[in-house]
Amino acid sequence: MLAYRHAFHAGNHADVLKHAVQVALLRHLNAKDKGWRLVDTHAGAGLYQLNAPQAQKRLEFVDGIGRLWGSGGLPPLLSDYIAQVRACNGGAGDLTRYPGSPLISQQLAREQDQLRLFELHPTDAPLLSQLFDGDRRVEIKKADGFAALKAQLPPPTRRGLVFMDPSYEIKTDYQAVKVACEEVMRRFGEGMIAVWYPQLVLRESQQLPVRLKVLAREHARKGWLHVRLTVGEPGPDGFGMFGSGMFIFNPPHTLGAALRESLPVLVERLGQGRGAAQLLEMDLK
Image 1: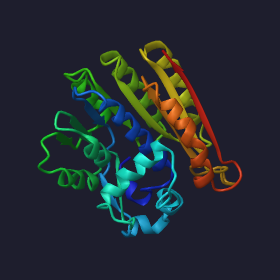
Image 2: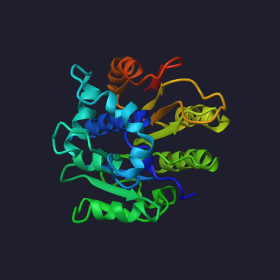
Image 3: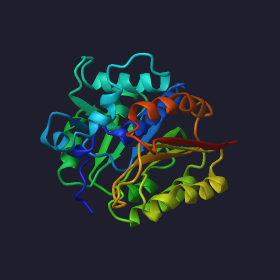
Image 4: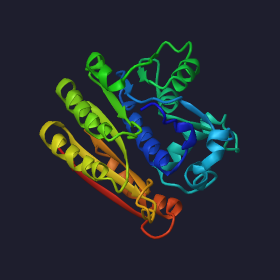
């Protein structure tokens, strides 16, 4: 259960989609002065060195953020995302570090905002604590983020985002995501939830967005949005991730248009041959 470390996959095509959407959601929350709370259920280490042995072993960032780095003329959603990665690199032209979702949240958080970060991995949890040491806006716990939701919601300002991206190493993660979303909607029906999932041949992966649609239709006060980026075809053995998706409860109304403009660019830049495709569907209220 605790074998997965994101350091081997940082900056890959899934991170590009996941974090571009995250930046857009936080920008939406920043449009109002009232503070927000970000609950990150699987925060990871927070920052990844792309020249470290873990990232160099697979070089997944080369076919992810690497294909956008240094590009001009990107749509605003992607340009803003690249700006956050560039800020993590000190504004330099070299891509040597990649920010996880907690660091992206910190970069966009204001004085009145709160970050609640949860991570169970015995190696990543201490790294996460060191990274944010001294930032009073941030609370970090070595705990199950799903189990912690009850104590974190609703936030005092009734504004916030719950960010869920478990590793899905075990099939029970899919059911755990659905149960966690139900808990959030019961406690914080107007809040945003962003769920990332891997695109796999596995039946549970294919069924998750379908199950979340049913839940969102019943409980999400502002509707839902589902986006998926497919970068290729499944391998001949049927294993491996060939894309990923994000399911958003109560999305900003502007997110659909921003993604519609950005998805063709992502398919073109990150596609790895036959099968590269996009999907965008939504039901807003």
